[in-house]
Image (cartoon, rainbow, N blue to C red; front, side, top):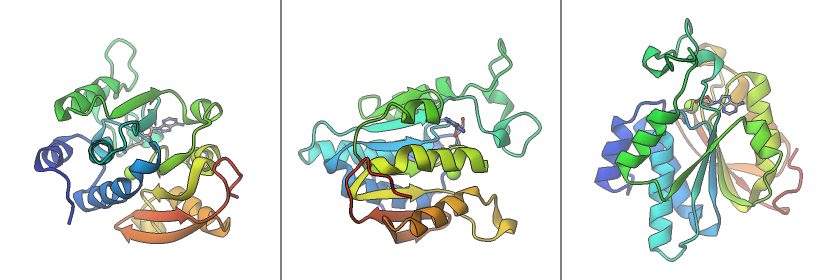
Amino acid sequence: MSDMPADLLAHADAAKGFMPADEGALLHRVAVERAAHGPVLEVGTYCGKSAIYLGAAVRQARRSGSPATVAFTVDHHRGSEENQAGWEHHDASLVDPESGLMDTLPVFRRTIQRAGLEGEVVALVGRSTTLSAHWRTPLSLLFIDGGHAEEHAHNDYSGWASWVMPGGYLVIHDVFERPEDGGQAPYHVWQRALAGGAFAEVGTVGSMRVLRRDSGDAGDPVG
Ligand code: SAH
Ligand code: MG
């Protein structure tokens, strides 16, 4: 069971997004384990639902003596292909009427403010590849839940996974082994991570996979 404080759990439940409670509980649990060692980073903020689980873990780690730890969350806030008008996961209430573009940033801010986690969760607004190209900080945990097209999912792995520190976790969401259950790109990224030899699987709930980096230095290529 999750040891998330009840108020934060209620905020996570109420938030708009794509994170089942049992998978969120696993994300929270592994983030609590690691957050004392360095920042955690999520790719795929959307409206901040999963970020609440990460922010809760950061708060816990800070109270246990790691005041500098933080959760970063990366998104351009324009939605993935599957979020656009006419697609399966479109939500018309998230369209900015002036530009006609998706804009999840205001909802994210509201979600995190309501949860009281503005100090723990920091938004990085931009493309994953733009941000990862300049990233230089070892991560205690990387959560990949961004675009599910092959190109984007693999870019997220190529751009960020090498920053997972030894002993750190790589968490991948929406891993479906059977095509009839969902898109295959996160599954392919999961296979790639295991084939590279730097990561080994340590846990799974639903479509969430938790891998641990066993050796090497953060920043070294991971395959
Ligand atoms: N973790 C969220 C769900 C994320 S949905 C939750 O708990 O509900 C995937 C998100 O990835 C979308 O908000 C989309 O805008 C973002 N995204 C897709 N491709 C991206 C890219 N190349 N760079 C940055 N963000 C991207
Ligand atoms: Mg997901």
